[in-house]
Length: 383
Image (spheres, rainbow, N blue to C red):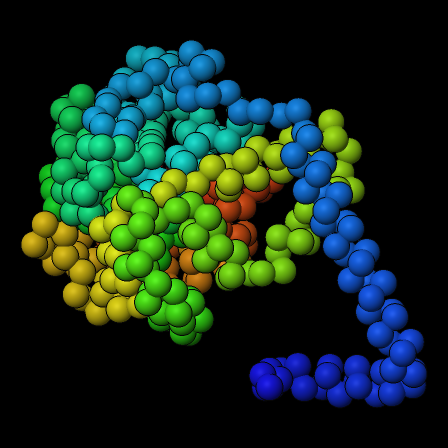
């Protein structure tokens, strides 16, 4: 039997006293009704989502975001065309680096919830990396290839276009990739912004590492069958971090008006969540085992292209944005990275949001986008 959490002891005792006043059959029937109602609400919410008319245009289908760089499955989209002043944005490149495991358009979910478009409106020329689905060129890629080859090459080409080093913004796993690329070629990066970026995978306790460790024995067999780690496997791992959240969100969605802005935003975000990207064999092992089980980054054992990735070696200013309610990257994990940077170069920001809400939530502009844009411009954001 699982032990009670100590902080729930009083609530459990109160609940037990309330239950004792009822016959066990009445309690069982009440629980059945609640379970049925919740399942029905979840089912109705899922069906409403599947039938919703919203569809995101295919990449580039609307013609407003040109591709400025391409290699294999990797593309870089140029949001400079959306800047109100093309001349002003010409020398203000910002490279946006998302995770490998999700599509990059979380930074451009729709016209109203788009960090990339907001930066363009502020006069920057955002360039968004879209890693894409691994193809033949990426079949044998590990993190070394994605970082030391692809990302560093992008950095060098963008710096050439900019006429000097550029600011880099990395989100989630993309922040880890951006940090490593910055340390491999520091001359190309003027400033670094890390949004909800993990580092110490044990800092918030062993929960995530235990999930990964339980899954680890099946990883070699799965990768022997599949060319990549399937998206469904990755989705199940993420879902296990908060197993009740899926039912709750679809029950809430089932109560929304279909044509409401909230419903459209929900569908756009849910489509992104379900549009995951499979990981190559080597990246799967590098991340799930090397990071989550062995905690190599925090132990100082993580290398890219034979070079130690040590945050203490950073030589440019860095802003770490650490959302306080993040369940995917616990704040303690991201805080460990911030604490490892040189004190004279680091700035931290703690928005009261979650991992995804910090980028596309109703308060994202106020809590994340605007402070980041101001920091890039030279202002120090409020902590």
